[in-house]
Amino acid sequence: MLLEQTQTDQITITEAAALAVSELLTKRNLEGYALRVFVAGGGCSGFQYGMALEGNIRDTDLVYNQHGVQVVVDEISIDYLNGSTIDFVDEIMGSGFKIENPNAVASCGCGNSFRTKEDPADASSSCGCN
Image 1 (cartoon, helix red, strand yellow):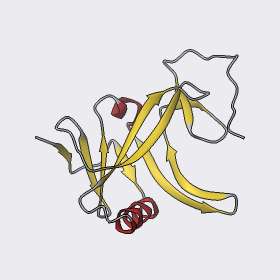
Image 2 (cartoon, rainbow, N blue to C red):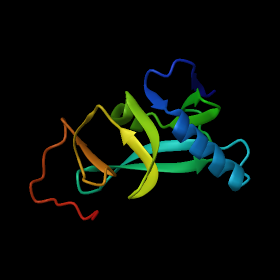
Image 3 (cartoon, helix red, strand yellow):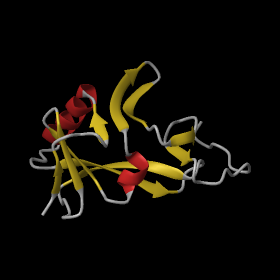
Image 4 (tube, rainbow, N blue to C red):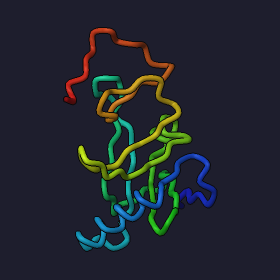
């Protein structure tokens, strides 16, 4: 049984991000797919964000429906993503998804990796995202 969330207190997707996901799903003919958002170890700040178009939603996934798009998050990643907002930005220097994460106390310059207050700072790490 999927853990479907009707209130999206834990993660939010903006209309711009939902539109970008919808366009990707349509372009790739992936009907019934969702946007999977996850956190993995690594990155120059300790953790890194990941996203994928997902056709296999697991029983333990949290499922959020917003703006016509399903967002799925596994039960471990939600602890790091709680309260986050997923946006899509289209700027002169490039476009892409951006995650605003209130749990991150430090992040890489490119925004792809982050550290939480529970994680020890590693003064030797440097950002290689330039």
